[in-house]
Image (tube, rainbow, N blue to C red):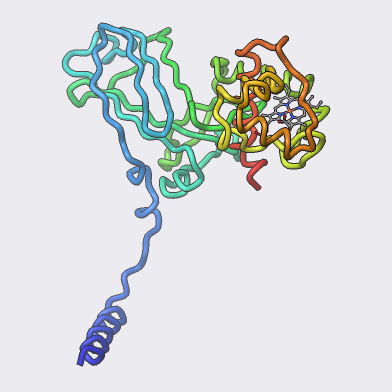
Length: 271
Ligand code: HEC
């Protein structure tokens, strides 16, 4: 009996479908509304650091917004939408065309809207609001673009000159240089193939930073202290000792760790 009622239901569904075929309008399905908004209430009397769920951070110095040139009245609300993956770009229908018609490759986008009691606010002349993407890989040569809708309502992007180098980017650049100078004679630069030493791609997923720093600075000391991981590596790699790098500071070795993490998260590594 169960089988029969199942068939009947199927039949009704199908006929209903045939009679009234709704046309799918993808433009309605794919829109910025599909991206989750994070809302913050802030006070303009003090500097504020807001942290989004996908790693976008906004630093707002006090008094950064105005409402038609005047100090805003009422509660200030900041809405943040973050698009940091291809899935986000697609579901939100985000295009990456510049005003000049060039197609950009995006690594992350953020939408920020400031209001006071529902009224739109503007950035005050000279205000130094900073936006940092803490979770997307840094790629050499990356630039910042500011988006605004054109007459057709599509987002077009215009180049901003104010790309500020964050501490994270500085560390990644430093790490890249130090790796090439000190490590690439034994560890491959593709991070995929083993050489004298093991391939270091994704090392951040299986070794924590503190252990990494200690092992790199003096793996022999780790062996003497009986660190089981260092002993295991030493045995696996035919008892060849890795050179010590005590002339590099902890911060410098950490920067190599950040560079390796950044390279491993970059899509060219994961292709
Ligand atoms: C003379 C060759 C040589 C150089 C130069 C060298 N390594 Fe190594 N490295 C090895 C060998 C061999 C191993 C495996 C044995 C061991 O870990 O003691 C290793 C292992 C490692 C490991 C452990 C990998 C794992 O699976 O956990 C890390 C991390 C590492 N090296 C980082 C570095 C960094 C960073 C540098 C540059 C500052 C560097 N190495 C320079 C030869 C080298």
